[in-house]
Amino acid sequence: MKELISGVETKTLKVIPDERGRLMEILRNDDPLFKKFGQLYMTVAYHGVVKGWHYHKSQWDNFSVVKGMIKLVLYDSRPDSPTYRSINEFFIGEHHPLLVQIPPYVYHGFKGITHPEAIVINCPSEAYHYEVPDEFRVHPHNNDIPYQWALKEG
Image (tube, rainbow, N blue to C red; front, side, top):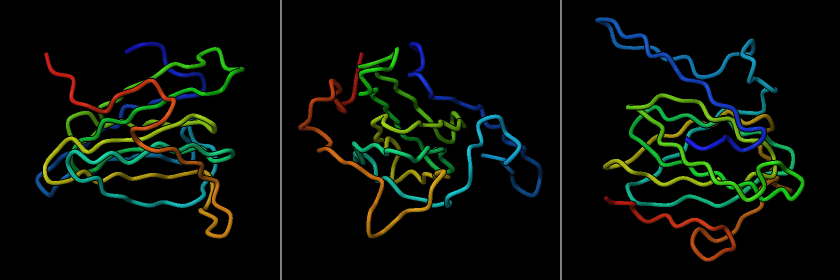
């Protein structure tokens, strides 16, 4: 992995299995990564579907995956950042349980890479404001971000 984009943090998640099933803590209020609680939601990405790009001006996102796998990609568009124009790519989910914390102004998107779907959990620092959302989008493929979502074989 290349250097993490400035402000991005990760936490390896521990899965605790037993004969009843399994447990995985994602984010606690005593974690060093914890900022504040806004809301908790889940979203689904179907195989091959790209959901992105967008960024927030005040919200911190905390992404994890509880079923399947995604390719989560971040792009630093902040001109004053030491990692300006850097890209981070994470493969997270059942086979790599990880929490990725995304700071404001960092573009992010993800692609479902398992059949039939991946279930993503986000615990953002802010509640969604329906009338004035803190969400700024660009097209997933036609934009100025130097990233292609295509499968990288070889």
